[in-house]
Image (spheres, rainbow, N blue to C red):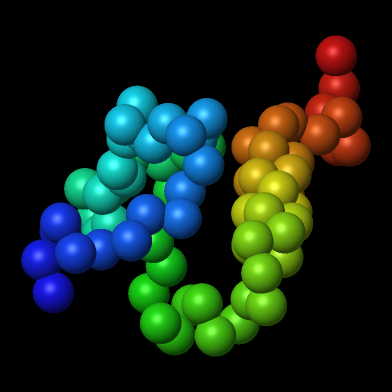
Length: 76
């Protein structure tokens, strides 16, 4: 079937000529966010992106608490 034989059911007001095609794969640009690729063994541990973010935020808080000097045992 060639292009001339195809029937076009699209309404004239739908102009798709200005649409941009997004690339798939590692060179794809994100849709406004940062995309991080997890290794399969790591991804198995997290059901969704929210779970990954929650775990990373916990790790950030724990790291900051370890890095900040505590006032216990220090005399000023």
